[in-house]
Length: 161
Image 1 (cartoon, rainbow, N blue to C red):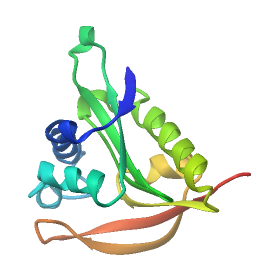
Image 2: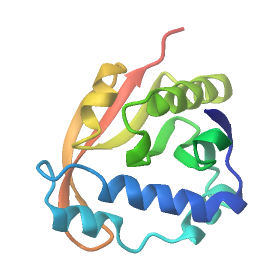
Image 3: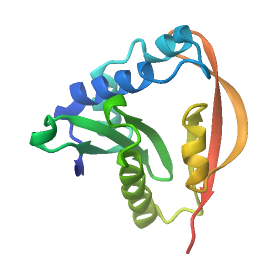
């Protein structure tokens, strides 16, 4: 696996992983309808805009050519916030999320030196973040792009100095 910065040319691949990650989540915490509502209406222009105008940075995890030569996951962040972390279901549980988060957190700390790193987590992702030291500061309802409401968790992790 190789980690590299994402570019606007990667937007179609980022969109594909984003959709696959959401749609590949196990039904149970969220219903199939809720997952589909969350995954709907994603478009590559969103990632291009985020990179060019919202100051978001992306890091991509690519698998070696012998493993299919495709995008396994991505993480995006802004100065003190993890914006998104999505792993293709074929690569879940193989350390991709950990590698991406390690790099993103290091970049945030090096660039902004915040007191805390913030993120908004889905219910399925919450345990992963809690294992990394994030704590829930509030639970809220989040309106998906398809219009359904799902549980989300605002979380933070103090930065050690």
